[in-house]
Structure formats: C-alpha cells, structure tokens
Image 1 (cartoon, rainbow, N blue to C red):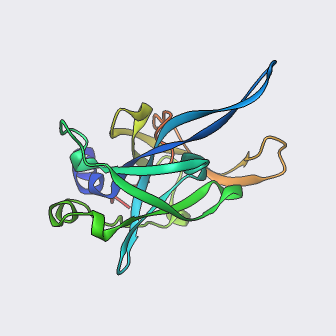
Image 2: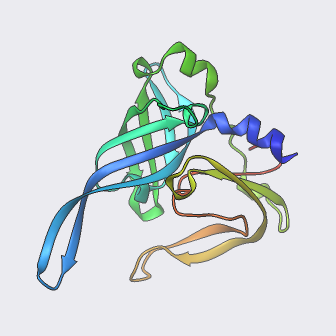
Length: 189
C-alpha cells in the first residue's frame, strides 16, 4: 500500500535549501552571484548532539548556508527552518552527510520525525515496485511510484567520463529537487 509507505517514511525525509554563491561565465567574463537551490535528504542517524542526514553532494555544494525543513512541517503557513552544517562528503560519489543540532529541534519536532530504515540494494530485483519521496521542484515533498528498471547501470558521473558509478535505474518520476531523497522498497526501506 503506497499510502502506508508514504505515511511511514515521510517523517524520515527532509527538504534542504542551499544558499550559496555560483560562478557565472559570460562572454564578458566570470562573476559570482548569490544562488539558492533545493534538494532532499534522508534522516539516517542520531548521535548525542546531532541528527544526521544523507543527501547528494551536488545539493550542498558551494553552500554558505544550509537549512532543513522536516516533512511534517512543510504544509504549515510558517515552516520551521533548521540550520544544518556539512559533516562530510564524497564529491566523486555525489554523497554528503549534513547535521542538524539536536538543540535546534524542539521536543515536538523530535516526536514527529524518525530515522529511516536502511535497506540492502543487493536484494533488489528487476521489476520490483519502488516509491520515491523527495522535494520535487522545490515545492515540498512529493510521492511517486515506479519499478526497478535496471540494476548495476554504469553511468559517467563526471563531465570527462573519468568517474563512473554503478546505479539503480527506476522509472519513478524524479524531478529536480528530488536529489538526495528516498527510493524505497515496498517494506519502506
């Protein structure tokens, strides 16, 4: 039941806003301008002082200021933006971990969010149904469905083709802003 998966897993998915500086190249030269982009993340852990969130590196790249909105709060008239910081990243794998201080999260917020259950991609099968949850187009969390279309797809991950990755392919609708979001099996992993 897709509704049950969404209800169970939405508390583990966040929207991320990245305020930074982008370098723009024109025929008149290169200059920098303020930029703002959005993406998604998945709550993967908690330690004594922080909530840990995994996302794509390109979602947080070049950030001066990162903020997170938890899915339960997105529909409110005044969602709570919580400041986040980069904990680490692997740019060549397009992965990053960001953290939110537990001191910045109220008890009410903590009661409405949860750490995701991580699955094992080695157990996926072609044609298996999946659910994608993410901050599509920066408009808030969306839920789409699809199937596993291919396993172990080799994809060039750098412009010069020097870095490649083995990825899962799905036909679930993925839009800008879904980056870093969850791709879930029918058990919500």
